[in-house]
Amino acid sequence: MANDAVAGNAFRVAPAQPGATDDPVRGVLAAYTRDLIKGVDETLAAFLAAEVDALTEIDAAMGGFAATARDCVLAGGKRVRPTFAYWGWRGVAGGDEPLATVLPALAALELLHTFALVHDDVMDASDTRRGLPTAHRAAAARHRAAGHTGDPDRYGEAVAVLIGDLCMVWADRLMAHATVPPARLLDVRRCYDRMRVETVAGQFLDVLGEHDAANWSVDRALRVARYKTASYTVQRPLLYGAGLAGADPDSPLIAAYTRYGLAVGEAFQLRDDLLGVYGDPAATGKPAGDDLRTGKPTALLMLARQLATPAQRRILDRAGAVTAPHEMARLAELIQDTGAATRVERMISDRVGEALAALDTASIDGTARTALTGLATAATARRA
Image 1 (spheres, rainbow, N blue to C red):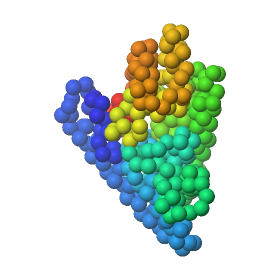
Image 2 (cartoon, rainbow, N blue to C red):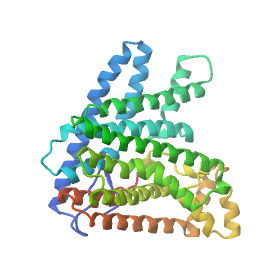
Image 3 (spheres, rainbow, N blue to C red):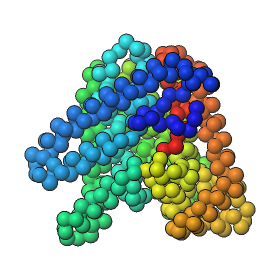
Image 4 (cartoon, helix red, strand yellow):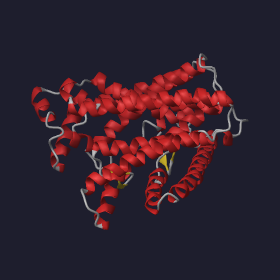
């Protein structure tokens, strides 16, 4: 599949067989994905409209704040987590179960994702997200425009933290709208809670790594990828979806989803590591070299240090201390020269292979199997 892996808000599904560019199965899966994304977006819009109205009754300013949170949720994105959760559900339920029963629970994952993004942008001091100012930068700009007193940047960060907190609560509320048996929803909630805890653990390790780079390693960078990204992007959404369908937690299918999700999720983060250095800002919506600017100890940077000559390592040690575009371009070129980028590409390919092998170990609905096969590639060969 070509690197153009994103179409609108949805992943394009790779052909079921190499070279099958006109495979009709691909068109069927794309239709499923379009319907899912449309359903998620409509569910979010309806839910958030009611929530914004309720908060506006508290105070007009509160309504404006809630509308800002709503806009963060609806501002685009690939809807990756609901997509994996859907196919996790479909792989168990088959094609006869109505999507409407679980759609609120699938859409809730997008609210959880917004919580994580808004807080992550504050922690990383990021300026843009999806080509637009991040929540804290936008709030700071409104503070300045209104002529409010106090530090606008501090205000913006406080508002963004609250936006993230609100999205976390909204996710809980929307999940409860799923019309599945209460006992099953409680089991799903346990998976959801574990996903949230693992996300916080990964985020903490990510923050720690930036302040303790001397004690970091490739293994610890991969641990961050496992908990910050793989858990809540692929692995737990798949298991969450299977739980919504009432899957037996001890079944071979759950073991296959666990193995597949970890492999694709890690590959997803490794692709992010490469995009953080070599990505096109027009596609990623973020400035090129952000990870080099902050000195984030990604697997890519850790591998580069491991493979570098002493002279190269001295230059790499300046990551996090350079801001000029030409200096960051030099660092990016040097990382390429060490062979680290090529090694990461190989790690991505190996993990995709591991994920596809996992799918062969269990009985899965045929359409879901084909979709998950395509998603393993689409999620890891993307440009944004």
